[in-house]
Amino acid sequence: MKQSLPRVIAAGLLSGLALAALSTPTQAQSAQPDSGRPPYTAADVYFMSGMIHHHAQAVLMAGWAPTHGASPSLRAMCERIVVGQGDEIALMQRWLRDRHEAVPDGNASHDMPDMPGMDHSMVMMPGMLSAEQLAQLDSAKGAEFDRRFLKYMIMHHQGAITMVNQLFGSQGAGEQETVYRFASDVYADQTTEIDRMQKMLAALSPQGHSP
Image 1 (cartoon, rainbow, N blue to C red):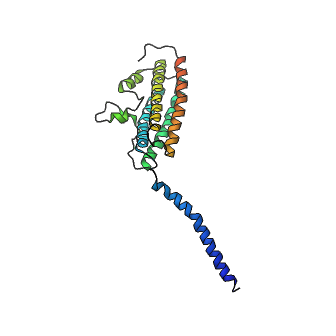
Image 2: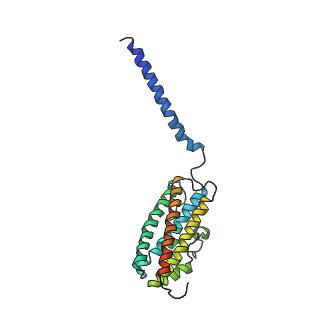
Image 3: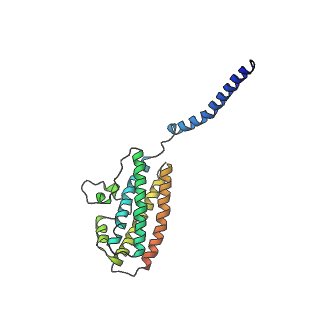
């Protein structure tokens, strides 16, 4: 029994050393991000903030479908836009809030281009409609609403793809995990929707002159 005690102590010391050895890499890995490049860039913040404004206008436009006599197929698409892009607005706001960045409220009525003091460089992101174009869409009904909506939303989606390309073209941008996944999803989803909307637009009979 007397000889077993040193063995127990030695075994305990070896176990402690083994645990320390196992824990050291984990601690180093957790400290590594602090010593490296920041996990996001100013271009990421600009993209997420700008895309909130961009999505908000799309939600506004799509929300008009039920009251403007849109066709059932267009109304179904608009419902998907309202729900899907509404959820993405919440994701982008949360991402910005978690990083203590300024968070746009996501209300398109606050982003009208003619509002005094509005930052036009932020609000009027690529593909977004002017106040005049929004008024033209709002004044349309039935098949004319469908036609104008599809034309304008194709342009709107193309602008979002431009924003994604600008993000990934910026040095070091688009590498943070959430930003990368979100931007990649925007590119894939809106490319697919552009193709769908182009087919829907081609199937419509001409309704007057183009706006």
